[in-house]
Length: 73
Image 1 (cartoon, rainbow, N blue to C red):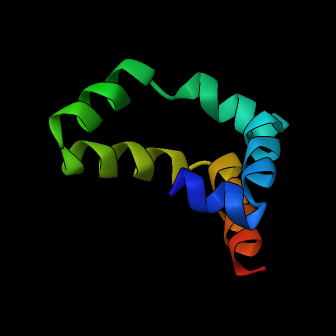
Image 2 (tube, rainbow, N blue to C red; image 1 turned 45 degrees about the horizontal axis):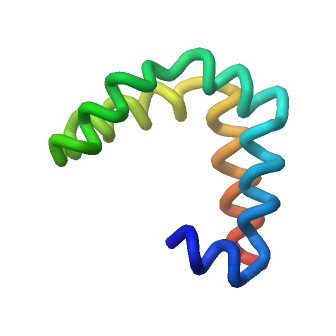
């Protein structure tokens, strides 16, 4: 997926969103260790719960909408 994002030129846009104020705020709210544990363990339920938490915030909703728009281009 990362390779395809680079190839399509969207990787830079994703990076810009991550570096945005909303992205930075969400980054501080997310427990990186919990995400890593869920990914390594293949725990999709835990990942869904983390994502629901992110999307329940105004910042998460704005970021998701910006990503959706970017991916349509």
